[in-house]
Length: 527
Image 1 (spheres, rainbow, N blue to C red):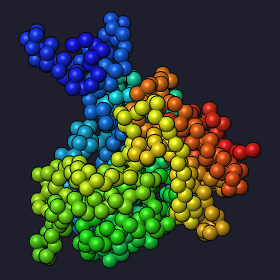
Image 2 (image 1 turned 120 degrees about the vertical axis):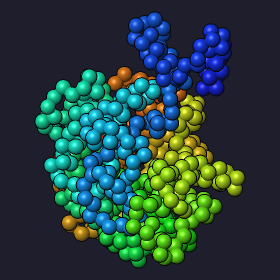
Image 3 (image 1 turned 90 degrees about the horizontal axis):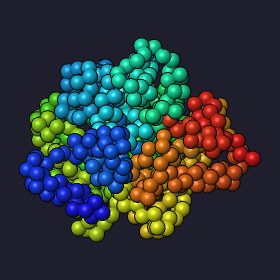
Image 4 (image 1 turned 30 degrees about the vertical axis):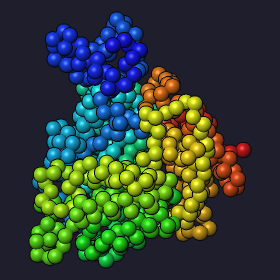
C-alpha cells in the first residue's frame, strides 16, 4: 500500500497484516514499530512523519485533551473519615484497591513518587505521546490530613522526577529546595502545568489554601458525595453540606479549579433525590463545580456498607436504572462543566453485588442517549479531540453565572452549533462587599480578577519545539485571545489588575504576555 494511502489506523493495520503475510513474520505491534521509527529518525535514515507518528501512537485518547495525566499514589495513612461505603485494604490508601492501574504502579515502586512519575512518563513516551505538558494528579486518602513534611517531600520528588526525566535515574539526593525544583521545572522538557489533590471539604481552610499554593496545587477534588445532610449522616461522612459550601467558596476565591466527586445511589437517597441533587449543583450559586467525577455506589465487599446491606433492606440501582439516572444527570450538565469520569476503575472481582459493576458505563450511556436523539453538553463530550478542521469557523462564547459570592465568566472558542469546543477560560469576578473579609485569601489577590483556568484542547503538541500542526488547534493563539478578552472584561468591571493561578510549567507562557510572578500567582497590572 503506497504511503499516501495510509491515512487511518485501519489502513495501517491492513498494511501491517499484508506485509506480515508477504514476508511470513508475525505482525509487529505499534509500540515496536514506533521504537524502530524513532531510532531511524534519530539516525536520519528516514524523514520524520507526524502522520505516521500519530497513527502509531497507542491509545491516542490519552493526549487528545491537550495534556497528559500522570497519577501518583501516596502511601497509606490513617483517614479521618468513617464512611461506610469506603473500601479498606491493608497497606493501601483508603478508598483504593489493588487491581486499579495507578495502585498497581504504586505497589511496584513501593509508593515512591519519583519512580511512579518516571515509570509513567516512560510508558507514555514509549507509546508515542508527547510528555511536555503534565497534569500531575496526586491520589490516595485525604491529602490535607497527611503529615506536612511528607506532603512537601512527595511534591518535591514529583518535580525532581519530571526535571530529571531525560536522564537515567536519580542524579541528586532529593534534598533540593522545593522552590529551586519548581524554578527548574519552568524550563524543563517535562513541565508540570497543573497539580491536583484529593481532600475532604472539612479540611479546607485559609491556612491549608496558602500551603497548597506554595506546593503548586492548582486544582482540588472535593469528596462531596452528596448535598443532603441526612444522607451524609447515614453514611457517616463526618461533615455537613455547609463544609462543602465553605470549601468551594474559599477555593474559588483563591483561583483554584474545583472538582466534585459525587456518589449517587447512597443509602438515604433515591432516584428522584439524586436527579434533584445534580439540578441543584448548577442552579445554586453555593456549588457550581467546574468539573465532576460521578461515582455511582459500587457495593464492595471490603466496606462496612456491605455488611450493613446484609442486615438492612438496601438494594443498589440495577444496570438499567443506573443508565437512566446518568442520562437524566447528563441532560442537566451545563456547557461550562466537564464530567471527568463516570464509574471508578475498581477491579470487577472486588464488587460483590449491585451498583456500578460496568466498566464501560459511560459508553453505554452515550449509546442510549444517541438512540434518544440527545447529546451531552459537558466539555469532555464536546472536546475537539482528533476532529480538528483548520477551516472551520470558530465563535467566541461567553456565559456568566453567579457562584460563591461572585460572578464566574466562562469564555470559549467553539463551532457555531457548540458541538465542538476548542479552548476555554474561566474568569472569577469577586464581589468583596458581599462576603466576609476572612475570605480574602492572599493580599496579592486583593482587588484583582482571577483567571482560574486556560485550556486549549485537541491533540497535544510539544512545547519545547514550538511546534504547530494542521491536525491540532494547539499553538494557534486561541489561549492568548481568550486572555486578552479576560483582560478587557476585567477593566470593564473596574479592576486594575488580573491574576492567574498558573501551574509551575506555564509561568513562562504568561511572562511573554506581560505577567509577573508574585506570591505564587502570575499578576498583571492593567493600564
